[in-house]
Length: 232
Image (tube, rainbow, N blue to C red; front, side, top):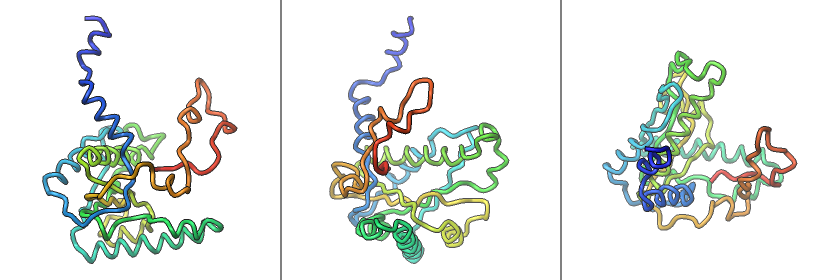
């Protein structure tokens, strides 16, 4: 069997491939949710998808806290709001524009998960000796797995990163060497945004892929698109 034939044998079907690319391109950072509950078996599938993400040295550094206590959810919301105001002040001339944006759906979504880095992770040096941040990259892969699975399931997910790390650590009784990296809002939505919300709101636009790729050298900074790149 030649290489091309072998590759074809391993290939997903056309509809399966189309589904993968559709999930990638239609995934959105959702901020608007309905109050419908998320079925437990669906949450189990989403967490399982996250847990099957790649990780450097197979360290699997992700840990998730499912927030089911309303008071804890309210406290998370307050932590985010405090940081939202601080971020607005730091943005100077874009402060008012930023404050008009909806940046989280913690009080609206069906489920809230806090994704974090495991404690005692410094003992893992495989793949991290010169790049210790690969633990964070691995957690990001887990979140992306969950995000794509959620989109395929018709469920919205929003990544909230506006929070004081120490405040969330205290609230969730995390060890000192564990670190929260994302508050994930998960739930049913009335519709998915046609384009990234920050792009629709005029906050930023997607940089063309061609501006991010170069052969044999770092991309020329002069080729970068003006404005702030959007993370949707």
